[in-house]
Length: 312
Image 1 (cartoon, rainbow, N blue to C red):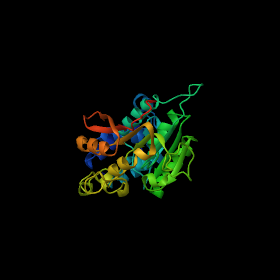
Image 2 (cartoon, rainbow, N blue to C red; image 1 turned 30 degrees about the vertical axis):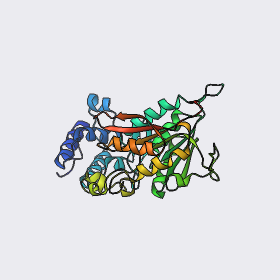
Image 3 (cartoon, helix red, strand yellow; image 1 turned 60 degrees about the vertical axis):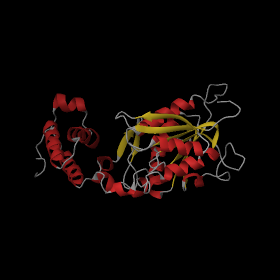
Image 4 (cartoon, one colour; image 1 turned 90 degrees about the vertical axis):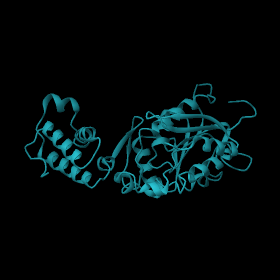
């Protein structure tokens, strides 16, 4: 295709974008084209269909540029520079895993569990939350914004990812989020943090969340090019089994959870839930729930640390 003519209207631009995207094999061509006009060019959907305004030449050039980048299968979220997640604008780009809609299930479940914790005399929930493999910070920020009296610690090993998380913390005004660089629980120590300290000097949390890398290494090359060629491998690779980080988190969680605290893990569709349940039991955790996504895949694994005192 030669490019959108300089005299195009908004509806002509929409049709051109749909045809272009479909022609390069984009499955959700209509949805992407609408997103490009709305979020990329700033054209309100109502105005698009009601008024069909002519496009300024600058917007025509911008649209052609976006489509050329998509032709290289660069993720649309990288091109637009952000994605919506649990009502928040999350900036993303090279070095950041793109938050997926199914990860919102984990946030929803975590917020529901947070209600089980004690509140102070003013009805405020005081809880320490740890988000491992935070990436762009999407989970941590969604929890922090919905639990304004919580203290949220977000950890990632990637400097690039933490750079995006810092931008998103500032963008969303989440003052109750602390960012730490490190390898899973290795980033959390009593000399770095305040909070409940366990009998081995470990900081304890009421909630631990994680969307760890869980793609089997041999499968990464078969993923869509937007993922395999653009998103950071460190945020995808779960080792040979896909469970390397999941197992590490299950082993480390008991020592970092308060009695009665919860661990919530996102899991790959098709993961052997019985295997995870066995690992959970070996670690001394109780299987609380396994939540399915809209496609019917078991998606969020929830475990709880026993509370001998029966407080929670």
